[in-house]
Length: 71
Image (tube, rainbow, N blue to C red; front, side, top):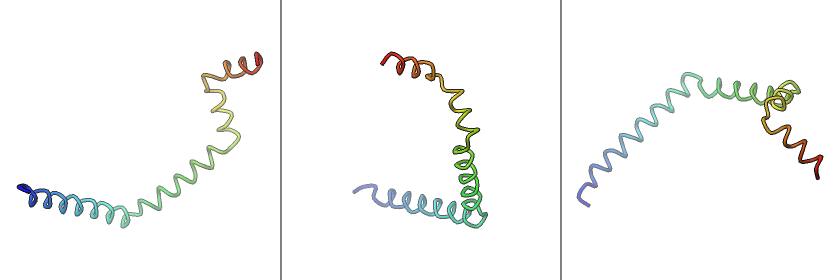
């Protein structure tokens, strides 16, 4: 391979950049914050208020009810 050393350099540099980004996210507590936000989001999505909003904003709600009446 003519450019094998070039590809190896790119691979090593990319791995180092990715590892440094992961290290930064671990050290700053990024994953802890994201875990809390995701659990709050799931709690909200399963609440009756969110389900009511989802149903109210569903553009197909009228067509679904009409198709059930016709069947």
